Image (tube, rainbow, N blue to C red; front, side, top):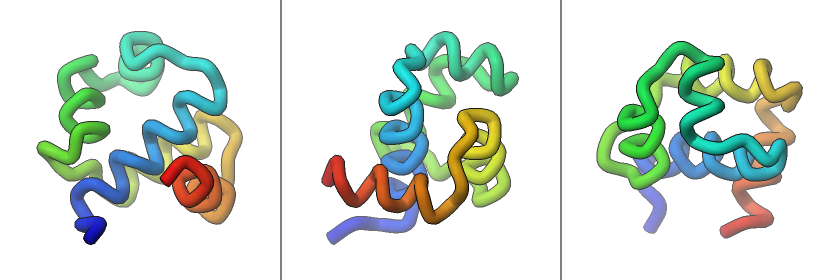
Length: 74
């Protein structure tokens, strides 16, 4: 069962990989630490909805596109 905590991180990870960003590069450009991004992607912590949307926008994805990317990688 996918939890809400891991779902946002999975969307971020799928979008990051689709744009071929490293965790370090994305974290720097978005203004978060690499550890924060790692925790989100691993499901240890929960990114806010605003952070998920902000990252998707920064990577030029819409929310539905981000959800589809995550679904395809699931």
